Structure formats: structure tokens, C-alpha cells
Image 1 (cartoon, rainbow, N blue to C red):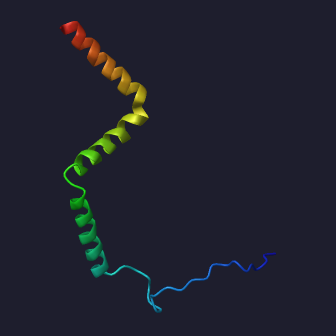
Image 2: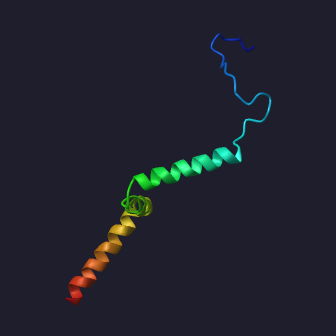
Image 3: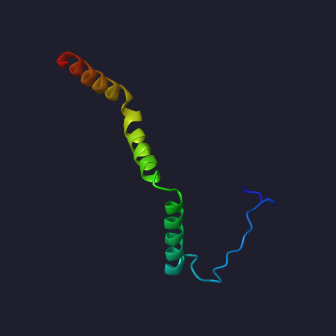
Amino acid sequence: MSKPTAFAPRWDTSSFGHPADTSPMECSVLADHLSACSRSRGPWQAVRQASASLRGFVVPRMLTTTLVVALIAGAAWLVS
């Protein structure tokens, strides 16, 4: 048997009986805001994103990456 609590969530939305969904105007304003934020971060943002992508690829494959780097370094040492 469930017991009512005094801490039940109580909130209202501003949808006034309509579905609480985003309008195309809100999406457009959000896109403008995100592009302005991206421009304000400067040209290094692309480098940071590439670094994050590379890290996301390398970290789960740390042993394989280490072996590949060691093989390349060993081959370069043998060739020189």
C-alpha cells in the first residue's frame, strides 16, 4: 500500500494546456546562440574538438595504440 507524502513533486508548466514542445522560433534562437558561443571560443575550438575525438578513440584502445606506436618507432629506428 502506497502512502502519500508531503514531498510529492509540484510544478506547473507554461504550456497552458498545449503540448510542452519547442517551437521553430525557439530552435532558431538556440541555434543562433550556440553558433555565437562557438565563435566566441576562438579558432582553437576545432583543435579541442579534434583532441577530444582522438582521446575518445585512443583511450579504450590503449594497449593496441601503445603497441602500434612501439612498432612504428621500432621500424623507424631499424630503418635509420
